[in-house]
Length: 290
Image 1 (cartoon, helix red, strand yellow):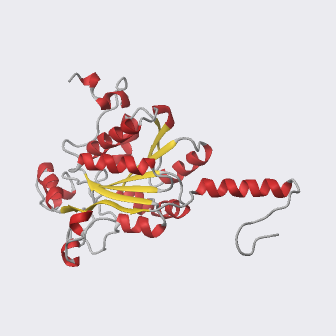
Image 2 (image 1 turned 30 degrees about the vertical axis):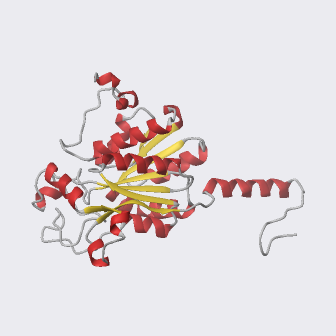
Image 3 (image 1 turned 135 degrees about the vertical axis):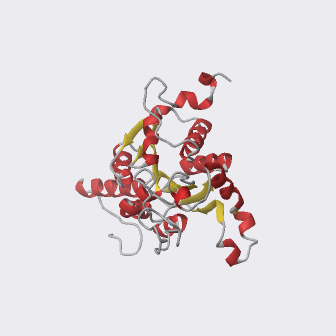
């Protein structure tokens, strides 16, 4: 197949000369490919999509993609994306973040975007480390693993991204790995189609920092670990709790329907207009005005 005939080609900024900063074998490119396939399958016009990122290896993704894009400050991608969605509600806003970007510097924005049920899709690429800045531990670095800032082993328990998302109020939460590329793009497609705050955890790896410090081998070795240590949700339900705790469980973990922030906010606007114009204002539910 000629390069220009590949599905991804139409979605890349092929006339620009942005250097590729991702290490050879990195899983972030697989996530980008999955995102492109999901958008292509839905049939969204490129002008109707906005991809927003923060800082870190994953933050480079909007630079390569030919959508409306924003490369924002560290941890603030969801804050920028929330403003964008409120100003341009017809846009499909997709936020790509790393684990440190989303849950450390941006942790406050993450839980409140979920709580408010902002109609966004958040893709968190979890490689369990700050890769770009030298391998410092992140909020998802597993216990006892080594990092540049934990040379004798990490002592903080990791954040469970999906469980945190569900508890904070996300309407759709799913997880897959960069080994399961086709499954990943199907989950991203479902997340984009969902109304409300949707989250996809894409479990990846960093073989150049985390893998090297923990003697986990090459990118291929770490990819093989994702294959061998993950199970589908259906398979996980047949495991004992202690067996399941050792696995990366893949699939749709949470899917509920509830009004998103803009729907509720527009209702408030209509009530305010009715009040201001002197019309009788009735508020639904117990305690409403009559």
